Length: 143
Image (cartoon, rainbow, N blue to C red):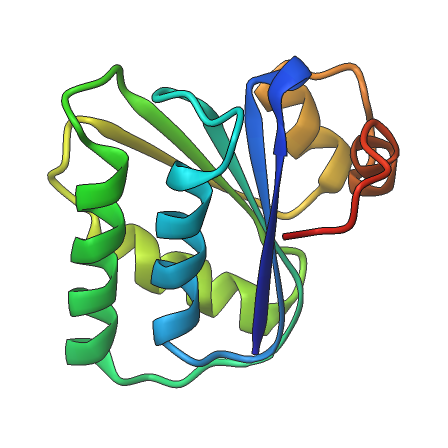
């Protein structure tokens, strides 16, 4: 799996894009790298695009460890964090639901799983109606 991210500061948003078969260490590394990137601010919303995920490793203990690391990176005492998973495919939905279940009970992270791209972006309150349009905001390559 590949996980890339892009900070979209004008939209107060970090876009994470996953593709391929999941490897559990990559999401945690991407989230931690995003919090060190220029332009990062606590409280930025997260759009996790799982459209291109083809398979999910179901190593539940490893996933729980990884999600704990991600939650720690997202909760440095800041405001509630919105993490929206765009999951239009079955493998993406499986991964999003695994992540959602692992964060149950955390009051500081609001999780949403949406299948429709335009609906997900509307929920985030951005004017763009596609991930491609979001990416056009910034012509720099994904980190």
